[in-house]
Length: 234
Figure 1 (cartoon, rainbow, N blue to C red):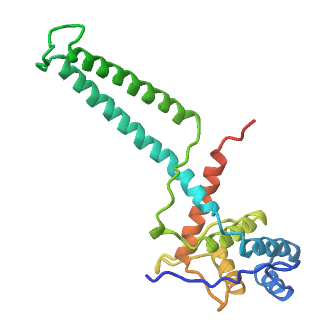
Figure 2: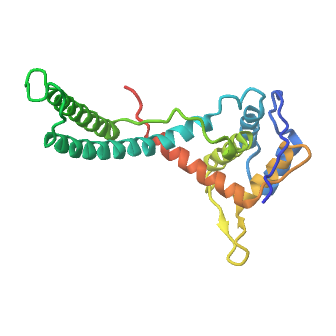
Figure 3: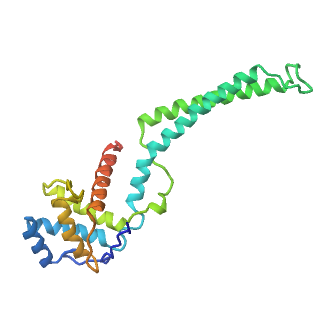
């Protein structure tokens, strides 16, 4: 499927926001929303479409937050394997003697030196494993890697749609979608509202597929869950 390209009306909007009076009046009638509520949406959309809004994307930060615990768990698994194999190697070396010139001379025997190194390495790995395991259960984490650019989405689209989702939830509507049992098409009041607003914010007027909206809704909910789990410093 070809990627949807939306040419957003990116600009600095005036006091009325991104939606003019006629646009707000039409949306008010079609979706039974109070005009004063749409004024707030208009201001929020103006922020979403401002030239400086999508630079250091919050989505990148959120992606890093989502990936952090997964990456930390992978590190802990590697440490457990390292601890297992290091212990196995240490036990093997304790039953081995390399015939160095000074082998058997306890003070200068390199075999004794390497056995001490193995013991120190085991202590260090056990310490790292124990403390990182404790940290994983106590603190949040995020990766420093940049998201795969091959999978980078339209960040502007996400910021715009998430403003719409926030608005929809704030006026007491369900941030959700439904699926047609025959066509599997994503639909519902929010999908209809998104595709009533997006053409007003794009040139030429564009719409967004129900599947893309569904993915954005799922991502929005996931981000809300991640943000809610982040401890607030006292």
